[in-house]
Amino acid sequence: MAAAGSSDGDSSNAKKRARDAADEEACDEDHAEDNSCDDDEYFEAYNQVGVHALMLDDAPRVGVYLAAIRAHRASIEGKILLDVGAGSGILSMLAAKYGGARRVFAVEATPGTAQLARELIARNGLQDQVSVIQGRVEQVELPEKVDVIVSEWMGFYLVHESMLESVLAARDRWLRPGGLLLPSSAKIWAAPVEAELLRSRGEKFSRFHGIDLSNVGDAELA
Image 1 (cartoon, rainbow, N blue to C red):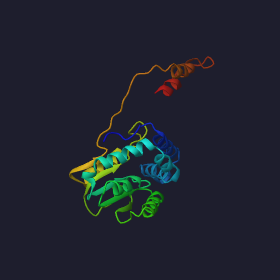
Image 2: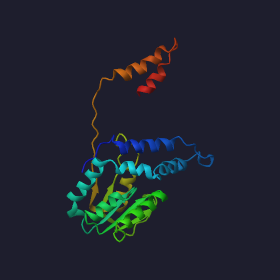
Image 3: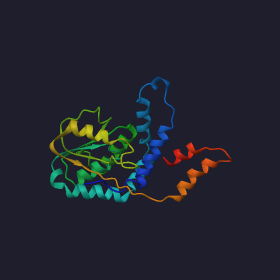
Image 4: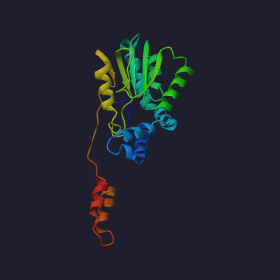
């Protein structure tokens, strides 16, 4: 399975807006010398139901994950699966219902979203298969190693969310040798474009009321 859906879809844009909104919050003075406040703000951005609703509304992306789960049913059925950054729990539930996973650990860092996942899992009668573990995947302890890891880690420009490191940490720590990682690869396509509108927007700063502000234009185009 390669990258599921378009990396610039609605859900990715929603994630970018959430991350950017978190980045704008001031860091407490007590944490000014470390990254703990940045981490807290990052995760808090995903503690909002609206963000997950937008991601669920990205039909192509969810559809590709479901197709991958069905295609790999032979590797999932009867096995132990870890969902990294489970959010609403949709991938955990799809893996249990359509992949036949015997047990699913849905790891979600934010308390509110973890509770939402528990409620949705119970509503769908999957609580005996899917267990929600609230915490960061780098810190939680699972009862056992897993056979499969699934994660919706892709963000704006594919790697915007910086979540890939968490998935790789989970792989190194919890995935059994020969286990399945979904997705296991991704591609970024790039092509040169002629963007006259962007160029003119940048150039206008070089002659801004007789003042050279070209550094601003360069930053705009960076």
